[in-house]
Image (cartoon, rainbow, N blue to C red; front, side):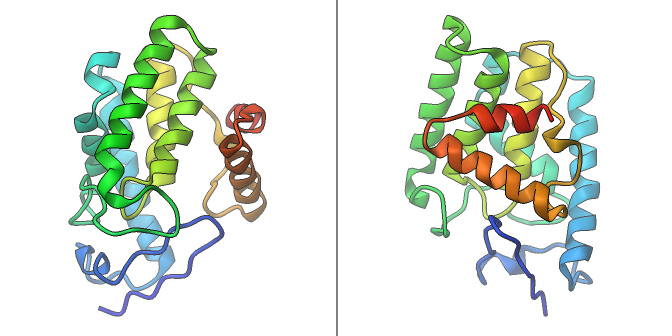
Length: 198
């Protein structure tokens, strides 16, 4: 397979051991891959719309993995499986389950104790999840959908707009998004809160 992908700032390159997991053998370009992934993600969003979620059935490792599988399972054989290699960002791959447990416990605590506003709880979860970088691909999109589900299903608030454009294709928007994540890395969620509702 001649899958040779270009990556924009902030995207994690697929390892050579992960590329054979592509289920659609005709894909050769980033544009084709993006289109198939977009269609799969739309199906996952439709799946979430009419379902009821609680923190008990959603804030679990199984749900995190299942959502990724629903988002990418038509495109990638390894969808829903935690990565087994280290990447240019994220925790050591062997630490993923431990870090997931920590974020789930922390988020339950934030919700129970109203530690932050609903938006900030959802975005802190999103930021921590993408920082762990659980999967070989799709971590940003997956963490944004998780934040949308948290804000809508647990807090009955509108989903985030994420700049109201395609964060992957719009270069300036992507730069703003990445910068807001870097600020959150330093504990400042102001930019990310603003960007998510832009």
